[in-house]
Image (cartoon, rainbow, N blue to C red):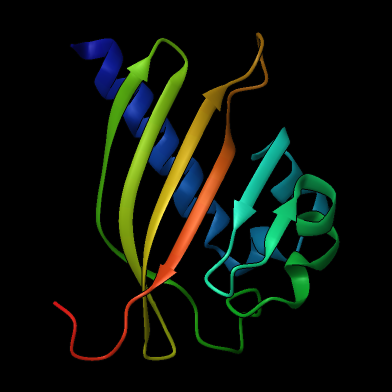
Length: 128
């Protein structure tokens, strides 16, 4: 049980770092948190790869200290298998609510936990 909690805690810590404008604006810092095989399906339906995300992340909303930043809530996780964690949570960014799902994979020795997959689904106004 302790191992599961530690894995989930580490994945949550990585997720929160990726919402930090200082991390988002640094290709090097964000790159340490994204798995080389990373993919994302964003709220717009766009598919992102590791390279496209790192290239464009500094210009995506939530990446500037002067602009609105992600406000996460209801974050929880489960260990799917050794070295594989699934997180679910919601974010608010400038009044826009989004449900999110991430899969985090533990890297080889010394690489730590990295986001392998991310899905964002916008929540329309009025939906519980």
